[in-house]
Image (cartoon, rainbow, N blue to C red; front, side, top):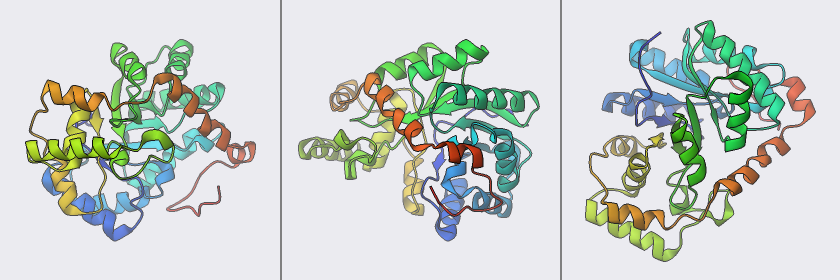
Length: 299
């Protein structure tokens, strides 16, 4: 097991299910210096990533691999699903495994305890959560005494749950932001009020000109300066390379101007996470999401 800590910039792979596009993105990322690959059981691309990384012949000790447990596996299938991820990703251990979403508290706890045991067995280096609220994290800590290493959450200029962010920082729980760029192009489907206004987009465009960067670089840099790790995703090698280069600093004044676009709170986040619980049926929990290479979506 390697001694790597989570790199500041990683490659996100959500929606990258075309093998050739994924292969090109990963190759460009590794060539450029990325050493963190983020996936999930529900992304349906773990097996492809495993094949691609095997062909790249990168030293496993130089790579940080993150995956996430599908919520329908929490009841009975957490352990089996982790071993499935290990097989698909062609590795003996995972650097970070997250619970993909907060659902019913006892189910979260049951799955989290399984991850703690797998960590003790050396199959997982770090355990954490994704899309978890303050109360959801507090419950896990209260019942197990084990703090998550990471909470991976939505973070953009319009959807930044500051109270949740503060709680995680105060408790030494690292943060990874995702969908950072989303509101610039279209509202995040989970947060319909997240779209940037024309004037907000115009201001961000002006900042891109000022710093001579693309919008992806600007907003990912904004998140980094707020203490986030980032996992930008692109199927285009040019964008993958561009997203790795954020060696500039946004001024305090410009940071504050971007911050003022936020229209989100931790309370709203708490309400929003219920959507995950509402989507997981008893039948899904019984069946789980276990598969060899790819699954056919029937949920």
